[in-house]
Amino acid sequence: MGRAGPTPKFFTGAAHFTPLYTSGRNVKCESRAFLVLTPETRVFFKPCCQIGEEQAKGEEDRLSAEHYAFCSPLRLRATEKQKERMAQSLPGINPPKTFNCGKTPLFPSIRSLRPHQYKIFTTPRTKELPIVSLSVMSNQPQPSLDVLTRSDRRDDALGSIRSSLSNCLTETNLLQTVPGLKSKTIGKVRDIYDGGDYLVLVTTDRQSAFDRILASIPFKGQVLNETSLWWFEKTRHITPNAVVSAPDKNVTIAKKCSVFPVEFVVRGFVTGSTDTSLWTVYKKGVRNYCGNILPDGLVKNQKLLANILTPTTKAEDHDVPVTPTEIIERGLMTQAEYDEASRKALSLFEYGQRVALEHGLILVDTKYEFGKGSDGTILLIDEVHTPDSSRYWISHSYEERFQNGLEPENVDKEFLRLWFKDHCNPYEDEVLPDAPEDLVCELAWRYIFLYETITASKFEMPGTKELIHDRISRNVSKALASL
Image 1: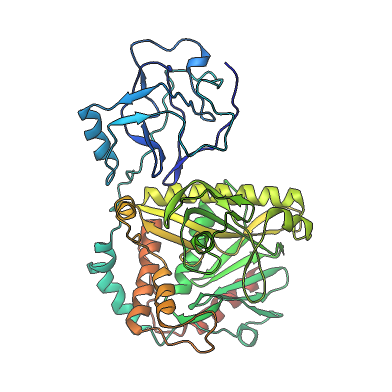
Image 2 (image 1 turned 120 degrees about the vertical axis):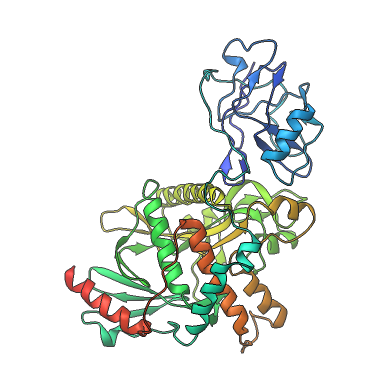
């Protein structure tokens, strides 16, 4: 047999499929995970499936994690018991009567993948392999719209949110209240102060979308800052970051670094409502987006076969999509810098998807920013997997709603974007309408809900009525004096 070469890794929810065994003849499979889910074909496998009557012999009868056997003559019939197990492990999916392992219309461009043309590397049959499934492996209560919209915790949080509507952190002026700060840079959400060897990043309650400020959301800055800090700590095994300390609920002190003028946007689904979202450009007919070739026939909110990177340049007024080649040619990054940063971005996203799925959420897309430290190390900066930089959906209802043409249950600012798009032109109108108070409070609760769901810890609201700016000034002054 000849070797066809590596095929794309397939993803289910947040986790990609890992090894399965096949004899190429008779295979018994229990369905605890699916390998591919598309409108054309659903193929279900348990990674640690058992070889059938004819035992596998030789390394060509075994499959590694990097390869997938396209055996067109092989059809695996599901027993009623198997279909019952499948329905239990994959809520909302109706299992097919037949498992088709043949080459499907999904792969017309992969000419090398013909039936029986692959070389399979040895993987001991006795090795225990992880099970991948859409079912959530977690002991904590799983999120749902009922919890999101009707719960005692929500009622309790909304009381604090409403009482804090007049105490949002919309602007800061630490240059007047904190000794030693040299200058201030105002971003969409963060105010960044130059503290000499360090930067002081203050996350405000400003709500940004469509490249402009829409509203101020109580506790939003605290949620973003503490969510990022949680993820920064959890992702140290993937990449170092610039965090030095967090002296206040809204503040992170970070190392100075040379920031790359590129945002690394990673997407796992065809979705979105902004001008640069994947669905917006796809429905206009774009099939080559930021260097990614997209097939025809995709529908809104459909999962991509593999996560893709769609970088943008950090323009002053709005983000501009760019290809990797353009990034190198324009001198925004060297080839080595881009390769390392893009690898880290994809690894961070895959890890984030896996953690989110364990907590009953789907991490749909996100953005990362990187900088180079004084020693040349590429560092993760800014924020990680926050409700501002990321899109989250409720996982258990996604498949059923997708099959019925319904929008996913989202836990991010997408509903605020949609409200403004329904009531104005947020890109062109000079003056925007004020967001309704109930909408502002609901968004504040969703930020808190997402933080508590991801971290499995209760969000601690400030216990006093002290002005946020006064508290920040005191805490930052103390922190800088100790550095």
